[in-house]
Length: 98
Image (cartoon, rainbow, N blue to C red; front, top):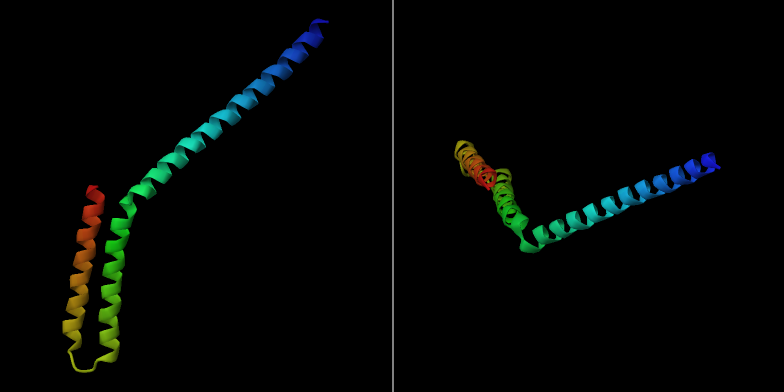
């Protein structure tokens, strides 16, 4: 009879441990999702994304002008692109400061 009690106790203990682990994972995911929702609701990422998008759009415009216009000198346009790279470095410094 003692062997049967040990087997039953072991089975119940195994079920309780698996259930506790599963509940712990579910609660952790619920909290992570709530934090993710708050982050996206507050729009913290959208400001940086908008700035990056604006810089990329400006670069594309400069490249379009380089490809289509034959009048301006190429060296001046390359300098404009270097200025845009400086803007990217400034943006990266701002993001790392946050």
